[in-house]
Length: 131
Image (cartoon, rainbow, N blue to C red; front, top):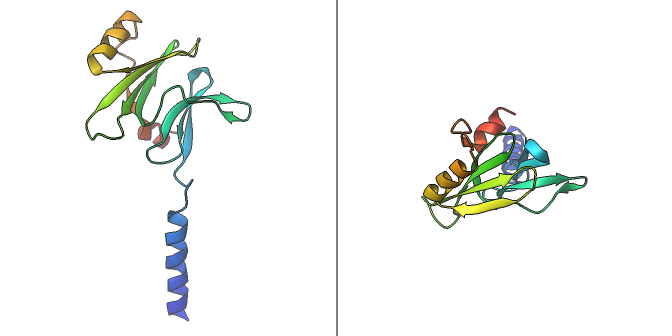
């Protein structure tokens, strides 16, 4: 009987840990935007709507983000590459996102838009831990 119970508990644990959605989350950002995680590779930024979220304004896979009163900045890992990243700038007021930028072009745009160095890109997983 004990052996049967252990097998049932183990199988239940395996099934539950494999279910989609258990690791999904959303993180509120300024301007009615959210970081959305719907799978390990589908981490995006999208506007909130009355019935959920609108279309992505920054595509997957967002790995870091930061913001001030005017802009949300994001770092995107290129899915097909281990070490390639793009950067994005989202104007909170207009909803216009610009990118993808390489690191040098991103730094130039930050300066052009006067986005302070104090606005740091923070790992998305760190936001979840502090939620």
